[in-house]
Image (tube, rainbow, N blue to C red; front, side, top):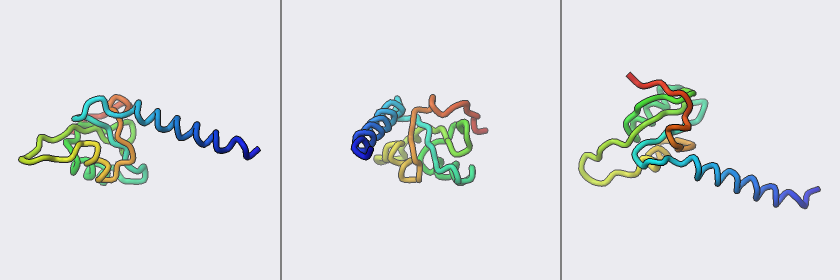
Amino acid sequence: MATWLPAAGLCIVSLIAALMLGAAPRQANAAAAVFPPWWAAPRALAAADRAGEVTGVGAQPFIIILTERAPAGGASPSLTSALRAQGAWLVVDPGLAGPCATVP
């Protein structure tokens, strides 16, 4: 029974990698960030705001849609790396964030 576990583990890891690559943002300047689900909405919004310009909220309050801010002189990190530095678990294409509400 345990002889199939390594093959099953490899299949699961490969599937996750394929899904992550397929869900990657199609444009470098727009993304949806998935923060930890136990974070309150203000905490997720504040973290996203430090990484880019918040444009909406996804299907759940911990999914934030944003665009890249114009650099204020000098190079800035990519939107994806800035979001990960702020605690985002996943950075996906905004179209995968579900129905969104715009931020007033």
